[in-house]
Amino acid sequence: MSLTGILNSIQEFVYPDKCNVKTLPQKYDDIILPLTNLSDKLILGGSLGLYVMDIIEYDFKNRKPDIDFSLTESLTEDELLIFKDFFNLELIVTRGDYDFIQVNPNEDKTVKTKPVSHFISKELIQLRKTSTEWVTPSGDNGNIEYTVDFFNTQYIKPRDIIHVDYNGTKLKVNHPSITLSHKSRYAYDNRVGKQYKHFKDIGDINWKKYFQIVKSIKSQWVENDGNGTWFNEFS
Image 1: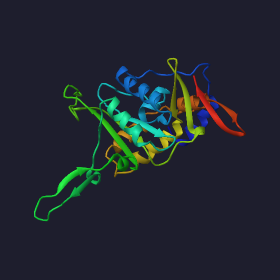
Image 2 (image 1 turned 120 degrees about the vertical axis):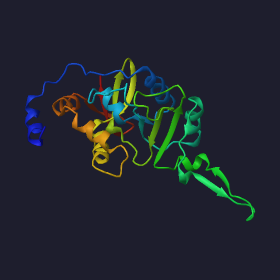
Image 3 (image 1 turned 45 degrees about the vertical axis):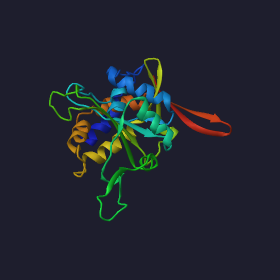
Image 4 (image 1 turned 180 degrees about the vertical axis):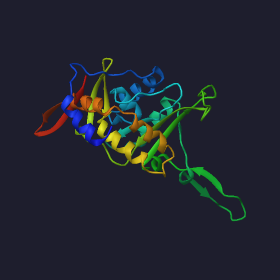
């Protein structure tokens, strides 16, 4: 739909009495809900956040979405270790995450993974679950069951958090405008490995429906000890 078409469709909104909250496959609930109960800092984002709010469809049989979280503040070392050990996850280690130690110039260097304090300072903190039994129909990354991403650059503000009534549980989700702004950036940047995936996701969005959904978010100003903030609810 063209920009003109999107703007014209604004006049045709029919706001739903009740928001349509979509349920994720159980395997994602089993990691997302316990994680968000362990830490109040985690805000569900990415494709899964958009799916929960019924903004995008998702082919879970043929695609494996990353489990993306925005943060309200930085994680502590203890929190990252709890996430890692509780769910039996492993840190995704890249070239810059190693120390090379050479005690004797005549011996080979010893390669050692950097401490946890290094990982919590990264812009993107990644954990993954591997399994020899997990294979997608296309066969890609067959041993990676899921990846958990913590975006550690710009911390999310209360006004950009949506409190979703998720099957009786309060789940905090990024405002879709935040997630889509990042998706748009990735979709038009050929340096991004999954550029086409993001491009296609944006192209498949029903924008009239999107505006209906975001306009149905209930916002109220909440005072707390002289300070106030917006509280956004989707239920």
